[in-house]
Length: 248
Image (cartoon, rainbow, N blue to C red; front, side, top):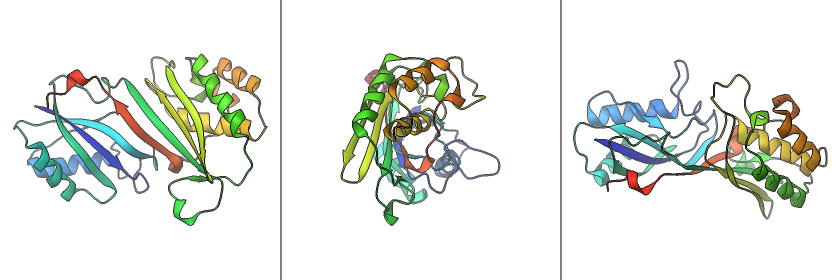
C-alpha cells in the first residue's frame, strides 16, 4: 500500500531534502524514522529537492507499507520520532501508482525579504537594507507569465530534458517592512526562484529595467541574469495533486 505524507520543515539544520553521503538531509531523517517505526527499510520519494537551508511549509512525499496503517495514529507516532524542525501534517492512503514527484500538477514558493534589521528573522528572511520600487518589481513579475523557457534562471550543468515551465502566478506583496514574492508553476528548475528574485530585486533597485529582463530570458544564459538570493528566505508553500490519487 502506498501512502502520502504531507509535511513541513525548517530547513536551517539540513543540507536540503535529498539524502547525501556526508551531510544530514530531511529525506534521511524521515526515512530513518519511518524504518524504525515500521521495522523495515523504508525509502521515501519527495515532491522535489529543496536546497540547503530552504524551508517547506508544505511538501509531499510517498512511501510504501506492506501493512495497512491507522493514518491518525501513525501520524502521531511518526511525529514523536522526528526532530522539532520536521512535522508531519497528514498521512493519506493513495493509489498504488501515485507518485509524489511526477503526479504534482502545481508547486508554489514564497521568498521573504525583510527591509529592516530583525534578529528574529536571521534564518527566515533575507535582510536587504535598500529602497525598492515594488510597483516596478510587480511589472517584472507579470512579464514572467509571457515566457516558458527559463534556462537563464537555471543552475548550470543541470540534467533536465526541458527548461520550459508554465508560470501561472507571480506577484510581490508588501506588509509593513516585509516583502513576499509569491510564484506558482507546474514545475521549477534548480535555483530558478532564487535567481528570479535576485534579478527582480536588481530591477527594483533600478539597476536593470523591464527590457533587460526580456533580453535576459531570451538569452537563455544564466550569466546574463541577476544574482541568486540566499536560500534561507525561500519557502516551498504548496504542492497540488489531482484528487483522484487519494483513496481516503
